Length: 435
Image (cartoon, rainbow, N blue to C red; front, side, top):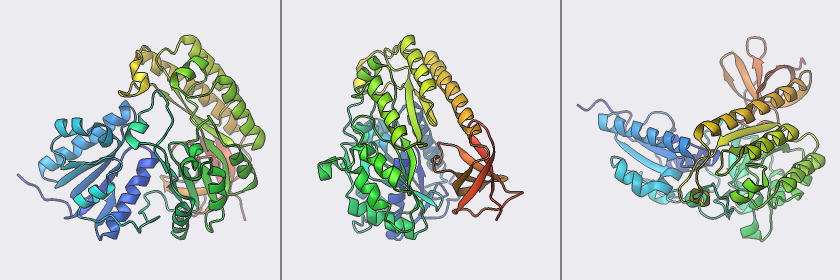
């Protein structure tokens, strides 16, 4: 028996995966709104678009479970249509069509015009920089390039996102200006590989020129760099970071491993010596910068000695921020030809050990912040706290600064001077400076 449907012709966009998917959903929603469509993000609607992730096993499982959940709602009559887009759909479209046929249509990562057509909307080329942001009003992601040309053995991103394509500086400036007019104060630059930016368009690595131009946009006060690559890192970026106060002293640079044999098999194009020197250069050129990295443990052939070397190196480097993933054996990648010979239990144990080491480092570094004053941006109110961040922290992945809302008031979206009063491994507690 058919139950009452949700509001007719409202499109609910559901986003899974990384910040690049968030950006794509925002562009989709901007296009839909421009065509006069009623669109919400992760709300309620009788038409559902699921923007999927297909990166590693856990992400794929979440995407499939989400599709199945909405398909069951469609079968129960509570929603009318389900469309699937994004990385999982790009990578496994024939399999998905066969296994979950009750989806109305599947679209890949470059199928936006066709998806819009299926939703009764037209693709509008003139909407450069126009999108419906889903993040708190004070920050937004700015995707400066799509795809990746790197040959990393473990990564399926090029299969789903294609070759590296940089966006022109003029287009990115226009987008940043539009965001600033809408109240955005912090730009988080994203790409699969920031450091490759400009090679295709300008025949040189042009990230430094881009961030210099973006820093001139009125209203933008912080510019944050995500997903740099260690090989061929353009060191002039550090000069801009040191000289330009709007560029946060922060970088997210996934290093993945440090044992030379593992790095070689991963096809990372670097060595322990070169990587260690690069991090040393970062800290010499921009004293006090926060470096975030991510590591992979349990890669095929990773020995106990390789892992112990990695753990010792993490202790020695004292990264401000660090995440650790277990290796995921992905078909059609170069590493898929290797035997996935590290047991899951061992992978998980190694990841836990790395995070225990990092937890202690983070605790020590945070204790040093007690009594210091930081300029923070306030993202939201949650429970009994206002939640903000320092320039050394990115949303969702890094430390948060918590202000007791029963004792103090700070305005969401504003920059506030906060004194740190207490700290745990991953959170800072603070109070505003008395005026």
